[in-house]
Amino acid sequence: MTASAVVTGLGIAAPNGLGAEDYWAATRSGKSGIGRVTRFDPTPYPATLAGEVPGFVAEDVLPSRLLPQTDRMTRMALVATDWALADAGVEPEKMSEFDMGVITASSSGGFEFGQGELQKLWSKGSQYVSAYQSFAWFYAVNSGQISIRNGMKGPSGVVVSDQAGGLDALAQARRQIRKGTSLIVSGSIDASICPWGWVAQLAGGRLSTRDEPGRAYLPFDADAAGHVPGEGGAILVVEDADAARKRGAKVYGTLAGYGATFDPKPGSGREPGLRKAIEIALADAGVAPQDVDVVFADAAAVPELDRVEAEALNAVFGRGQVVVTAPKTMTGRLYSGAAPLDVAAALLAIDEGLIPPTVNVAPDAAYGLDLVVNQPRPAEVRTALVLARGEGGFNSALVVRAAD
Image 1 (cartoon, one colour):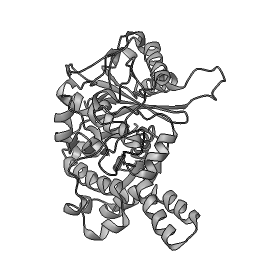
Image 2 (tube, helix red, strand yellow):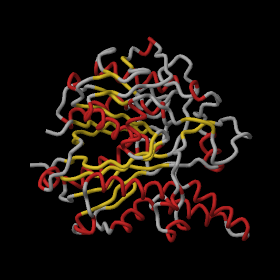
Image 3 (cartoon, rainbow, N blue to C red):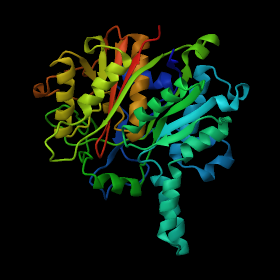
């Protein structure tokens, strides 16, 4: 019998809440964390808004020796891991070190660290290539630092597939649970709100340049004109279901099904891959479309990408036949951290029986979606589908179900 992978702990650092309790209280009530960038002066740039995590002071919660070798992203990831393990009731020092692993995702993260390295190297007249090597190395820092801090010597890795990476990391955690590892720390915290990261994101042409927080990020709205970036995400403790039950752990839900595809070459005339990813995930979970109670949308806020997502949902579920929400309108798109945060929100929605809203959006009827807007919607939630797409053609879908 294949082992089931369940989620027993949540560690959240989001622009609208630090910790799972604060995040959910803000999200269920529609509180946004999007505002003008404060981590640097955004005045010279066309985009000036972001979802920044407020009130996080690493010096208050981490040993001073860790600070010089980490940046904001890794510090938040370490603290979120501490919260997730505490939430799960896991004491790593009491477990076999080879029976615990860490699989996370990274996308835009590392820019701040790399920028600092570039500045140091520039002042010393060193080779640029050294800075880029530092940036590439930094992709693995999150996973490595979490492993070292908690004595975890089991399966380890970092998935890089832009915003889809967070779901891909959770899927890899599920695979390792099925192979016999008892516990995997997974998910992602991502951040690149610094000048170098900002310029790189602007080059992609998908950032909203509006300066009013309530009108900047509007997926599935006729006024959609790009997304607002953000920082943060969620770290989840994923465990073998039998092991979790034996120790009496609270189970938020099961990672029941997963699918991933890659879009065809532009201009090929072939259908985008998102619909297929959804169908694969549902089949893997053994659920029919009518079993899905809510979809947490990718919500690109780029009209063409919104159209593709709406068409995929309508093709699988029927036009307007599944409830859709996009709570990331309160945080911005957190790159690889966005989808794990949506998974956490889906699990909290299952726990409370409440679907969080999509804020500020007036849904365009042309998309044909039953979008939850402005106010949360009470509902029995047993099965949720979380979608994520990465720039360049990545599509991922994850089904989470209530625990038996």
